[in-house]
Each structure stands twice: as structure tokens, then as C-alpha cells.
Length: 138
Image 1 (cartoon, one colour):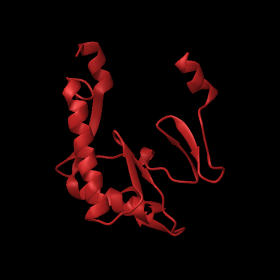
Image 2 (cartoon, one colour):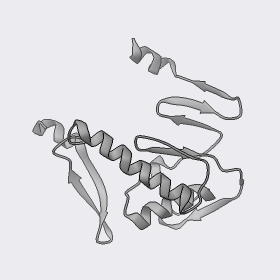
Image 3 (tube, helix red, strand yellow):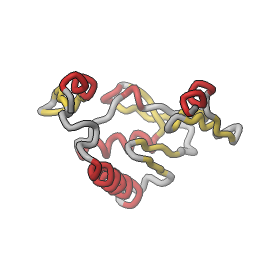
Image 4 (cartoon, rainbow, N blue to C red):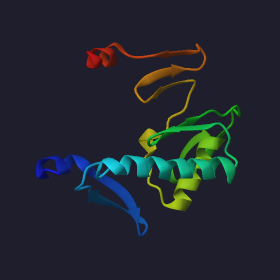
């Protein structure tokens, strides 16, 4: 990867109880085969979440996981000092146990969410794309 682009590939990961910054010199996936490897890996993680931890209703696409939780009660996720649906907290705890990094800013929930660039509104039973996103397709 070109050195001028590498600065855009910095990521944070936990190591020894603290967050460490690293540069991905190969790009997000390293090479064309890595997308398949990553998808298989994340698929295996979701399989564990569903079949071992019994977190039902999970969906995933590349590195995005989403789902539903009928329980309206929120649960404290202590590392972020924030409340989330119980299934979301269970998944975050699994990722913590496996050492999979995640970010608080990406932990969202509600009846209307942006999922892979589409606005999914469960109450209105509608999926829409913003006009800005539609313009990008032209």
C-alpha cells in the first residue's frame, strides 16, 4: 500500500489491558482472498453467538452485525458505561472474551437504523436510501 494511504488505515486494538494503534500496511483485507477469509471468520463468530451462546435473531454482512430484541429492558455494558438491549450486550461480551475489537460509536439500537447505507425502519416496515446515497450511485 502506498505510504500516503497508510495513515488512513490506522486502527485501534486492545493489547495488554490498553488500546494500541496499528497501521494496516496491506489494506483493509490485505489481498483479494482475505475478504473470503474474513467473512468465513466472522460467520463462525456469529455461529458461536447463535448456537453456543443462544443469541437468536442475529444477522451479519461482512463486519456488520445486527438483529432484534423484543425485550424492552436495557442492560448495562460496563466497559462503555452505557445501556443496550440484552442481546447486544451478550454479543459484546462474546467479542470481549474472544478479543475482537469493537467501538462504542458503532453500538447503536432503535426501531430505525442505518444498515450498510440503507435506512431500515422496523415500525414503518420500510427500507430507504438517502438522496445523497442515490446521487453517489449515478
